Length: 290
Image (cartoon, rainbow, N blue to C red):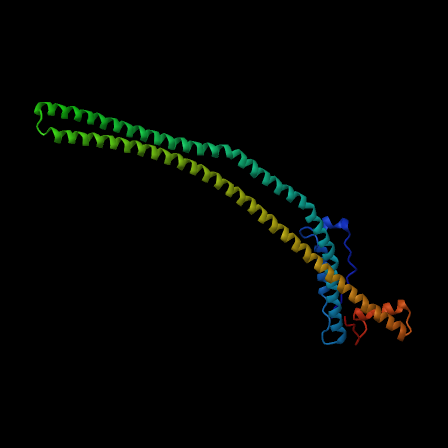
């Protein structure tokens, strides 16, 4: 069995943190711990098994001595970048608002163009209908003249019937003209209503899109805040657990020291030394249960 020198008490000072907690910055400490782990105690003896426990505890103590200041340094770094994250979030939100304000006139212009286009199409359709009505009216007038000529030439023959036919044709032409005018007016009104509806729908959709973007940003911010709070709780819980364990160990140590002083007649210094030797596994067949 070969033995190595025990690890010296590790202590990381705050000013060392930036140079240590970087890529491969802790290699020197790892090399010391690996050198300690290279020792091979004799597992068949009580002393060897105790030595294995002591080596494991030294590795745990070293890990704790390196990890705790590292966690504290990491927390400082996170607190340092939080204002930058908040400012970037505010900046992007304001940029989105400015962008929407910039796009608003164009969106309104597009809606107005659609309305004008619909009105123009309705006007053209109305003009075509009016032209058709005028043509039908002229045909009706020609028919009237023809009927008049026929009546004059044939004199009284079938005058009553032709007069009725003429009246019916005239009434039909007027009815067709009226129907065409009403249809043109109705289509123009429908086009205007459709344009207004499209404009309103466009405004409502823009508002929904804006609200959805705001809600998405709020959900993203809440998720980030929840993650931050969870991390802080985890760190606080770990610190509390470590503090409770340390307090428990100190309480047990105090009880042992007091017992050694009261029952073994040792001074406080001697009792503490005995406790240390027992904890380190240097006194065979003895141990402390925490």
